[in-house]
Image (tube, rainbow, N blue to C red; front, side, top):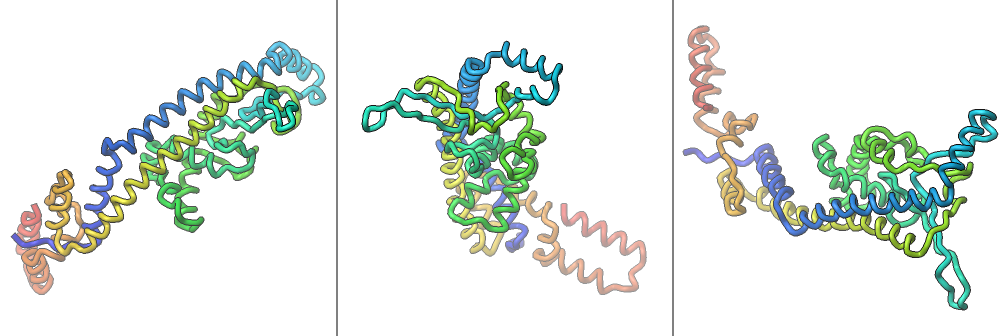
Length: 322
């Protein structure tokens, strides 16, 4: 049997086939990532139920209802009730070095792109969380949700920006400003809509620290830590895949024949159908199989071949591919 030489297309097909197996293997790193995402869902439910109690304690639903009635009656001057998904929570149960009570507060954003570090304006970590949380959905949309993890050692560059922007667009993120998040669409809007609560006031959340207890504040921190842990576990998992793929690329680049790549896959416990790779390759048989190439060239040289002979030659050629 004639050996099939490697070419770029075959290398890419083989690489992607093996990489896909790497990404779906039941490794410790992948399991840790999946468990971290499940914990995020648990903590989101606990923290938001708690936030509802804390916010309604500060802004009783009956007061909200009265103010909405006034708005209908008097219009804009009484437009002081709004829905929000981010809050400054604060408690005063800690003491400073001199024994005096001090305020401890932080920004907690329940939105999909909400920060994981307490900053109201830094969305980078929020973007990391969103891509990790909706990883499978984004993969199904031909996006690369692993781009942040793959490029963790690199500064911003056109390749990274291109894939990040595509992911954010697919999720439905609109604009770069903080309050533009209220206009999110698609998956982002569906996610955010679960977490809006009624608040009273006309200023942004940084001006209205809502009182809570130290234990309640700690629970909010556990939820935010869970979000950060998902990003961390995603990074660890993708790091392990990147390292494997780096070695895979080196090996495939060095191989001259497809059979060597097939042997590698077999040694890795991955079954690859050589015939399928060749059959779906646009040029492999035509260029690298001498018999087929010779037949094709002969057919090109015979300019005065009859129509019947051409049909027969083409039929024989197609049969040789199967």
